[in-house]
Amino acid sequence: MAELTGRLTEVGRIGIVVSRYHEGFTTRLLEGARRCCREAGIADDAVDVVWVSGAFELGSVAAAMAASGRYAGLVALGVVIRGETPHFDYVAGETARAIGTLAVAHELPIGFGVLTVDTPEQALARAGGPLGDKGYEAAEAAIRSADVIRMLRSESSST
Image 1 (cartoon, rainbow, N blue to C red):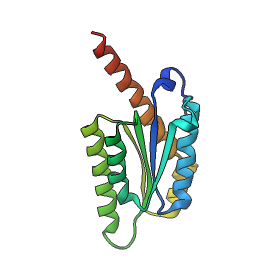
Image 2: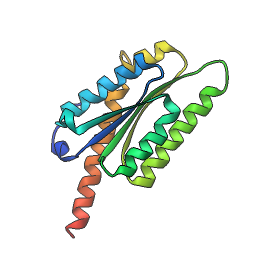
Image 3: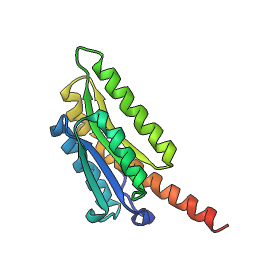
Image 4: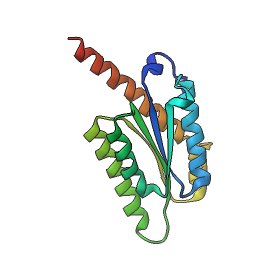
């Protein structure tokens, strides 16, 4: 993972919405996201963390956070593990759709840190394990995109 440097401290406030379902994994994702924010120079008191029941609720709470106008970027963290029923497909698909639609509608970067995996072992491997830290990566995506949007808006207002 590349170190975050530069103008990123000017990004502003970051909101992180986290699912309590599979909390052992989502806590690890949150730790990675918070570490990324710190490395980007974003103070702990400029990061708001909101917990929701499950991955499906990430969209509605992220929508309320986006509508508040407080945030330069959001990070959505959750884990959906495939089971024996089609429930996985509905939850994973609708969560992704809600977050994507919200990001475009509000012109607000939202780092998508929702793991969609077949097994708990796959979740562990991606939540700071040997296959990466998807919480960190989601926060990095949101922060870098917020920085780009901030620069674009600044350039357009000065012309």
